[in-house]
Amino acid sequence: MRSLSRRDFLAASAAIGGVALLPRLGRAAEPAELFKISLAQWSLHRALFAKKLDALKFAEITAKEYGINGVEYVNQFYKDKKKDDGYLKDLKKVADDNKVVSVLIMCDGEGNLGDPDEKKRAAAVENHKRWTEWAKFLGCHSIRVNAASDWKKGFAETQKLAADGLRKLAEFTDTLGINTIVENHGGLSSHGEWLAGVMKQVDHKRCGTLPDFGNFNIGNVGVIKETSYDRYKGVDELMPFAKGVSAKTHDFDDKGNETHTDYRKMMELVVKKYKYHGFVGIEYEGGKIGEPEGIKATKKLLETVRAELAKG
Figure 1 (tube, rainbow, N blue to C red):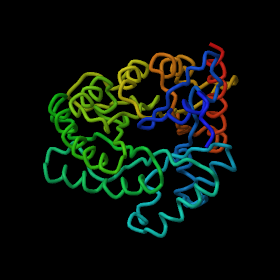
Figure 2 (figure 1 turned 120 degrees about the vertical axis):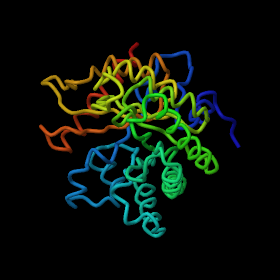
Figure 3 (figure 1 turned 180 degrees about the vertical axis):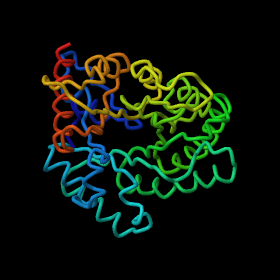
Figure 4 (figure 1 turned 30 degrees about the vertical axis):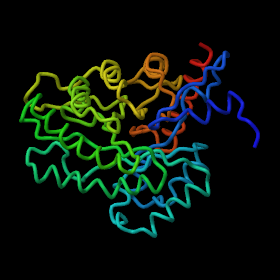
């Protein structure tokens, strides 16, 4: 068997917990080495809910229509297939046949992991276990969950409740080699300091974050004055725990820049400050242009910024 070159060895060792490390080769980084691009299924949620697209074919659509080789599934499109092993095998076959990497599964509607009721909190943990099995079978590195609670319980109490549910789930996902990662996704979970504090309390190697560039709308939860949070500050606070990154987009100007997020500033933070080189998931949620156009515009923007970052 031929010996591995230094480059081959570094490449083979580059993924730990879903986060790739940039090779130190004594040369300028190639753009593709800085980060990889995946597609979050939610970017096509209108077409999927309308049955204009088949969720089974998501990986094929991602590869053939958008030239992207990583997918982030959303459990909402597979709720009635949750216990269907045959369907799960078919879903994996589509990804394998199209040489697409299954990155993670976004899980919603399975109960509040920070529910004040201990039995409901335990039920929420139990409800996520099957999706962890899906993630393992598909080859994902993580399930994405929510740290929802009864926000009226206050800042510190909801941190404790969310940390309890997340740690119990992470202890299970750890048995399958899968990460439990939390997105800033409304309420106090969109408060960077709150969620970073939850991560510190969980203190488990399998529990991390999925910083989303756009999900910093807290809303009126009644226990803090803020209704929104600075997105750059929030991402900065969540990146130390990140095992994935969600590139949210809504609108673009005539130069192809996202109008709500300065992608150069944001990706400089992600790539340069925190040395994150794993998958960055496109999550287009806009309405002024169609879903396919929004996905392509986001991909082009990420590729443009990536090339600029590679030049130093």
